[in-house]
Image (cartoon, rainbow, N blue to C red; front, top):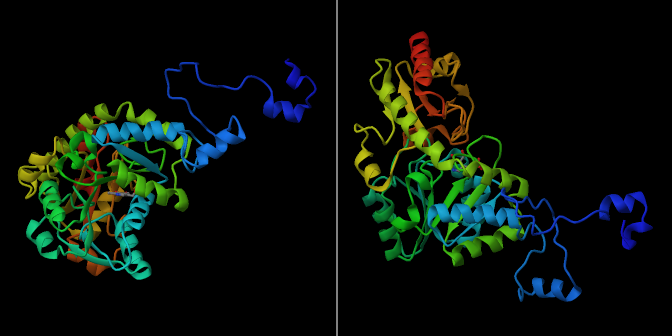
Length: 396
Ligand SMILES: Cc1ncc(COP(=O)(O)O)c(C=O)c1O
């Protein structure tokens, strides 16, 4: 026992005793800085850190080594200068839009987006005086016609959720630049394994890191990726909004990232195999998957994507009731929302992920009541197909 701790009581020792775990241990695995605050070596150092005269960490809401090291891996995957992590994909979207848009400025948004993103946009329109125009972003002419000098941001998902429509990132980026607007791409479905929007001219990439990036269905997180000035603007907003990703979540996320490329290869292969099976099935009316040559988005997808991911959606004959019966009849596929996990997940967008979108808006976007979404997992493809085959025979 050293002199400093010799006379301390058990309560103090439990807190201050022993050797602090500091640098120099050379752990192979990323160290987890599970701390809210960082210690200043002197009053002077604290003041310098707050005055931005010195680099370092102060408080985890403002920055944490584990969180930043994990974010830097996502920046590297997207070929970006900088990335930050948030507490969820929705936190990434809301914080970014709040940071970049002023009341009265125009936002052009894809007509088909994740349900909660559409709900968020509606709320921002009502509460923050945002001027939002929804267009079919898979049609470049519609985007061109909607763009205006007051357009500040164009916000798209490609492939979109849940119809897997593909937007021309390079084409939209060029149009947006002409009026000085920023292009933000939600790259959750494609991931940087299959598509790198920044290289195609987008200004920022958003992720629900809950999905393929982490890959194990055990965390909720988001990411914002792009140039240093733009990510810094979002970071300033995030510090006050406080919707951060905690260090333990970031640590789990970096662990998942170690197998990211391997998982994506399998998701791509399994997604394509299941899409091909469903396309030829007599009880399936339509399959939405950009990897199928029959898809109207196939040519563009082949141009800007390396693979097509594991998410697809389809309509079965018999509409809504048959779709619900199918969701109930599967035994290997798991009834749950989300995507990018090891397990194949099946859900019904109209009553689940897109239930908050008014029915008329859903129908206008092409999301029928009978649509079923499948997030194909990492199981053996024959087993996923056998489960779907059995369920389709039983219910449609
Ligand atoms: C395309 C897309 N973006 C964003 C989100 C929101 O992400 P999170 O659930 O991590 O907030 C989702 C969630 O399903 C999504 O599918």
